[in-house]
Image (cartoon, rainbow, N blue to C red):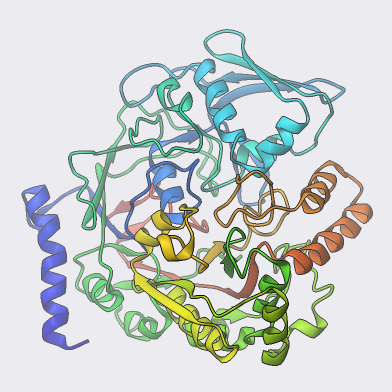
Length: 528
């Protein structure tokens, strides 16, 4: 980008901060300015799995349980709990003094309604419902859960991270349709969402929740004490990565979530900037096909995607330096104990002739295939460009539609035909640990009836395997089921893994308390 143009864009981005806050950035005190990877458009983490929505949810909501750095579920909003000897009955007591941002107390009935809404969308919640889950408030701070059959992953389910996580909402929002996004944001978490400070496309503002009572334990991944050490957090939306990096170097912003790899050397040369990997599990790049519309409504059409390009090409184009990526041919989490490459020997190199043959079997007749490309996320943009080129090599009529990632996350929930405002394919990333287990991988379940993750995959056999895995406690038998899940995924292609990327976060050296989590959380963070 030309230096003059970069300065203009930077000035415009920072002007939004100045005009909304009434003070120049350098004069503000107690403010953390954070450049997220995308703009925030969807506020409801139950209807959208976008990472940016999950980050927003962690700012404003709290959870009953949360994972620590060993990925063990720890009580968060819960003060105490008991489990019956047969594993069928759970009793939870909330911590005293919990309040929503409107001043109302958090009640057990809010938790019950929130869990019911969550269970309607989340794969773990679906399993619990299938096990006969019944929830009931006993009094204002106590509620129970009963099951027909025991399941050893109940607490893990309540602690799972990110979007589709079991965030506790007020009764008003928790009672709403789980398939319709809420627009009112009243949580009980460490920060309050500032509706008046929100400038879509420019800035998202959070202020310290003065009523929040942190746990006494130290912060530990998503668990522990959420100590808020700043009065205000501003998400500054700067779509151009070079402009965001320039703002970080100049001290105009404090944290840059996802600097592209080609900008890392420049950032590292600045002694006032720290560049560090906070997510050792990395991210899985994946391709999601729309199972509702041709040619990807047929297994053969989706299987063709396996053969159009090598993962190395996707990864080299997007991540560059091999230090930041590796190939990944496991549908159940690369780098985890569940990783398996079973059934992929013939899939690890491209075969355009095979791709054409499978597309023909799927009945592909040259209709446009709408591929969504985000221009503001370098990794996804570059992978999508390779994808589009190789699809054309396979004879696909590619309609590459460009927009920002926030627009794509809103558009991908549409079930319309691709030529009516819908879509055929999009590329995204998910945190590696989230894909590391069949019960936390949101893209693997294939519930029928038009529910589940966007793309609306449907396969009852896969759902049965996932349920069997969750119920099986024997590690040897579980390994066998894991391989069966992998082989079924190759047959049905709920999604396609495209490689694993490890990306550092960059922040000013006077920023302290950054917790090592896959997705940055801004409690415990202060600025000298």
